[in-house]
Image 1 (cartoon, rainbow, N blue to C red):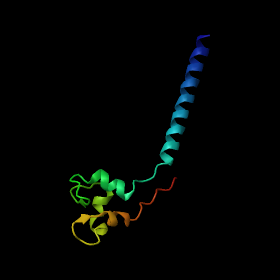
Image 2 (cartoon, rainbow, N blue to C red):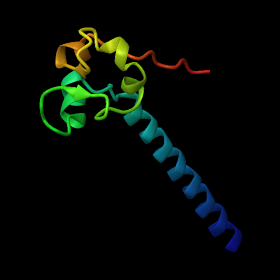
Image 3 (cartoon, one colour):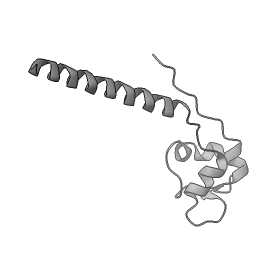
Image 4 (tube, rainbow, N blue to C red):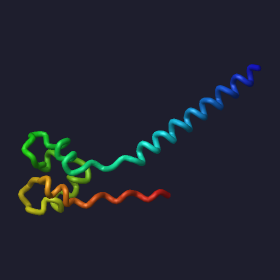
Length: 92
């Protein structure tokens, strides 16, 4: 009797873990990268409608000079829209 309770509890725990993992994977799969407008809205700390190198982080900061095509020291919405989308990693 005691073994049955332990086995049932263990089986239920494994089932719940598998369900939660599958649900998380589905949610993540449907996520799209943020749009240029969303990026500007999130990072534009001084709300001047453009991003300075000090305001940005991540891959944008690493590629700032490539994205800043007019070389004014800021990333405009148009420049952000023309930025190539990052390549997704292939599953192994």
